[in-house]
Image (tube, rainbow over all chains, first blue to last red; front, side, top):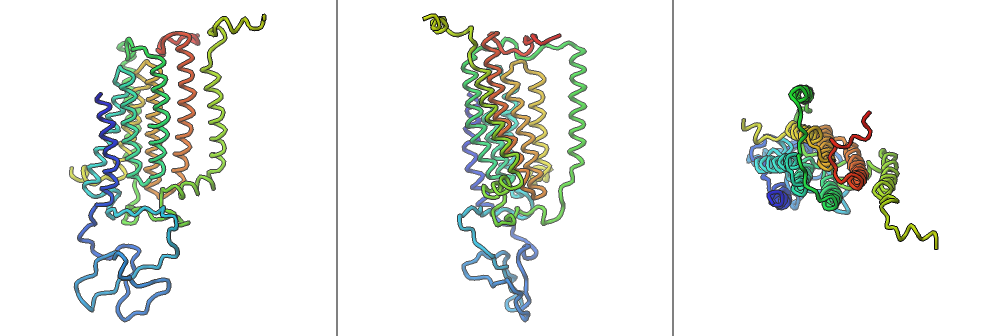
Length: 287
Length: 106
């Protein structure tokens, strides 16, 4: 029951992240014009490929209050529009990934849903509760993907994992329908010590590697990712598809073969054996 | 402290993925039910995917998205075959406790 509530909370929270991305207020005190804006002093001629801000445009930076002495704000002319509307307009803060406070709070909420669901999976004795915790964990993960600008992967995660794989798990749980006697294997003292040391070693190595991660510094590294070289929005279906059917074409084809073999193997393994069949069909040869 | 709370950066995503991976690893090591072990493996695959996407965001490289998509497809195939094995084992033995599956023990 708690897992249901958890999954419901995450499902309600997913539209909230889109809302928060749309309504995150821009930083008020930005010192200069943002990258992408070209500043031209009043007497200077215009560089090519640049047009003045039109009245309908959203200004990239607020002009200073100096009056006539203020430098003009110009915008590089965009070579092409996005004809199919696959560009996602995000008004994120320019300081970090989701540097605004509501987005940070949403990150913690979704991280809590992810970790809580995962703990639910590992600790519950009831299998259905474990599966429901898994669904909540996957919804949290897909929201985290959306924070990483992986819109397409987020939707795929929700469709494939929460929609397909978890349904498969529920089917198998319903077929099995046996409560566990003892969920956790009993270990002796020596085994526990060895296992604890091994886990401590693995965790220590992982932490050492994570500490060494040097994220790229500088203002440009933290900006929202711009469109790809073909003009598609970063992380959108078109951008991922262009990469998937270009450099990733061979893995894509290999995956199709793997899925075919997997389907055949699943049917072959899970098919009832000959001894399980009712006796009336085996006697058909004698007729 | 408030920096850690309110300035969510790449490290937060990496640590979240690492914690998720550790929970999945603990599930694989500790639990005895084959279904729970399969689910924990899925959790670890998701943690790896999250790390991939964080690095993709960090360096602005889209090919990690392709890789994550392929990992998802492999996970789907693995779940299908693994669940088929679980069903086959259950049909023969009436339980899916991995500690009792000792037919291949030397």
